[in-house]
Length: 223
Image (cartoon, rainbow, N blue to C red):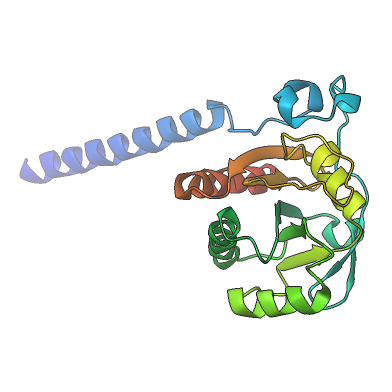
């Protein structure tokens, strides 16, 4: 009799465990997957969007570019083809927000473990930030050349990218000698060159949010 009750108890435990597993699988299958928005100029704070593109409601992507990195290599959209990347705008002599942003970008760099995520930092003072200056800065800050490009080049091109592609700044301007961009924004870009998130690069909690969103975006390509 004891043997019968022992077997019955064991059967009940096994049945309970199977029920839990089945419920979990059904819940997981039916639960909506987390997705990130695709940002279009018309849906972003107008202060961040150049007036010439505020009407754009779909198909907005990052424009093609040609810039030079800390190693003197020409960097184009092809170097970021089929990868997710995080972009920002900085300058090496900035005494205020840039050191914090660079520290946080370095933290992100250390948390990236695969080859399909990269970083891209654009100098907003390209006249000052020569290749040699960027290389010195990269060495000081521990930049990994395989993951992170610091780029300089034509100021008008960089400023147009910031204003009309990345939607990163609140100021108007033409990229001229007296034009100056200063933004704390980190921008998450997907493999289709679309904006998927904006984050304050000076705040730890925003970096954590970025990393969580990055995982969601990475997982969306596995489905």
